[in-house]
Amino acid sequence: MRVRAHVWVSGLVQGVLFRAHTRSEAQRLGLGGWVRNLPDGRVEAVFEGEDTDVKRAVEWCRRGPPEARVTGVEVRWEECRDEFPHFVICR
Image (cartoon, rainbow, N blue to C red; front, side, top):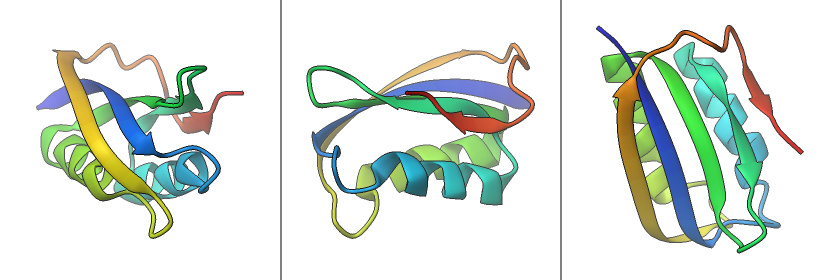
């Protein structure tokens, strides 16, 4: 089953290559979507793909790259829209 997860990650998640690592992980899992920094210091991402793979991406966000210090992850599960054929970093 295809799903969509809208994710907000808090903590030390900017300036530690969180977006680049998120894109690499999403590409490895074959997911579509995007990731971006927010002005309040959080990172926001949308993952679309097979249920198991999206769940793996969300779990990865709970850890992040080695330099990150994740303190919170908010997830909103949504109906998959298949809007994104690839995973990109938004500026």
